[in-house]
Image 1: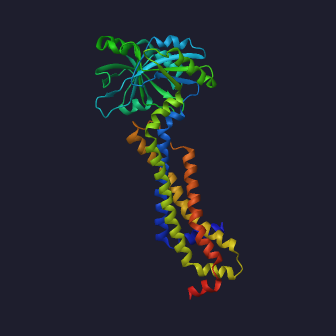
Image 2 (image 1 turned 135 degrees about the vertical axis):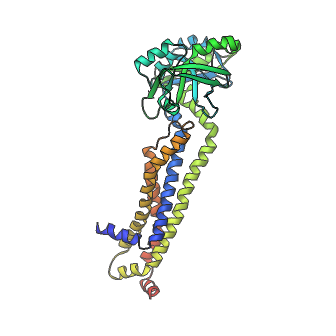
Image 3 (image 1 turned 30 degrees about the vertical axis):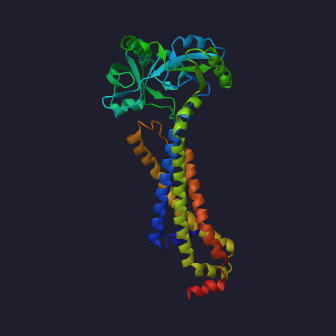
Length: 385
C-alpha cells in the first residue's frame, strides 16, 4: 500500500504533464477499442455461421438465380437433412435511407434450419398462415416503432413497386451474436406477384440453405450437390455458410486491414508520448535515484519505482478508456446500427486494451529505468547541484 502511495505521488509530481499523458492514453485506448469492435462487427456474420449449414447459389454469381425445382433434388442428396430457399429482396421503408436486410423465404423450412431466430409460437403460427405475413427482428421493430399487426409497405429496388406486408411476429436472437435487424416474408407471396409482374423471374430462388447431418460431411455433400447440376443451364456453387459469409467480407478486406493498422498506429503514437513523459520525469529526478543508490537501494528497486510510475499513468488512462468504450459503442450502435447490427464490445477487446496498456508502460519505462539504474552516482549528483 505504501509503495502504491509513493508511485502515485511520483506520477503526479508534475500534474499537468501527467494529466495530459493520461488523457492521451484514454483517447488512444478508446480509439483502439472502438476500431477493434468495428472489425469484430464486420466479421460477426462469419463468426455466427453454423458448421452444419451449407449455402447453394448460382456458380456464376449470386445475382443469377436457380430454378425452384432444384430444391427436391438437393433434398434427396445423401447427407442432406433439410432444405430451404429464398431471394434477397432489396427494398427500403418510406425513404431510401431506411434500408435494411429483407428477404423472401420459405417460412417453415427457413425457421427450422435457422433456429437461432426465436419467435413466439402464437406469432409463428400467424406468420405461417398469412401469405402477406412477415416477421422482423427486435432491433428493426424498435428502430421504426413497429408493432404486431402493423401494415408495412416496402418500396422495391430490385423488384419495383410497393409491397404491403402484415407484421405477424417479432423475433429475438438466441444470443447476442444473432442479427436482430432482418425482415423476412413469404416466398410464395413474392413468387405469385412475379408470375404477374415479371414471369421470367418466377419460380426462381436466389439461394438455398441446407442443413447437413454432420459438419465433417460439408465438403462431400457440397461436391455431390454441385455434381448433380454440372453442365446444366444453371450450375451451382455450394459452400459452407462460413465460406459464403467470407466471400462478402473478403471484398472489403483491404479496408479492414487498414482499420487494424490504424488501431496499432494509435497505440504506437501514445507509446511515444508516454515514453517522452517518463524520460522527462526520470531526468528531473535523476539525482533522487542516485541518492537512493547511495543509501543502498539496488538497481531493482529503481527499476520497480520507474516501471510502477509508468504503469500508474498508463493504466489510469487505459481504465478510463475502457470505461468510455461501452457508452461510445452504444452511441456508435445507435447512429450506425443499420450497417453494424451486431456491435458488441467483446471481452477479447478489453483484454487487448489492457495488454496494449501493459506494453506501453513497459516500453515507456525501460530506457529511463536503465539510465537511472546505471548512471554514475557522482555524475547524477553533480547535476543536482
